[in-house]
Image (cartoon, rainbow, N blue to C red; front, top):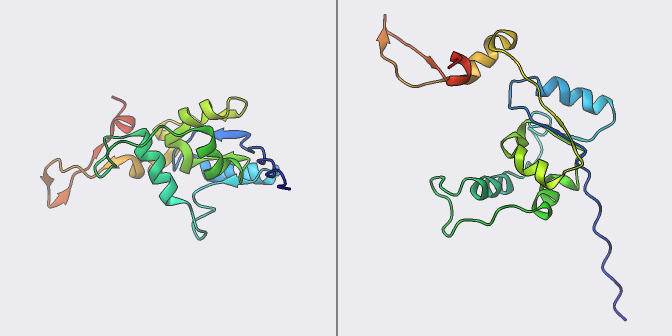
Length: 155
């Protein structure tokens, strides 16, 4: 007699932290851990095996026009896909999941969503450096002149 398959463990994502890198995610990820949440944060997993192949597949599904994306395009990700990537392992997802915030909100409608808004001045020069694009804007006195992206320039 065949025994029934074990039940699928429930997903754990309780908090979707919708913040890109350098927007306070490290501080808040530490706070989530202090509060007892198992947290997926890019800096915490830097030395562990991150599921980069799966993240790339999620990106290809979200943006099918990416250079090198498969043809035909990947199907949009489902709750089962997100569960396999993060949902069965973590209570909180932060910076590394931020490009997929809308998809995660749809997949986990009961999760709380945390959005941190920072102005460029409150973020200091680290955030400014992160947002700067290396687009060539000409040469002045033998140095590169950097042009800020739209989020930094206020336009």
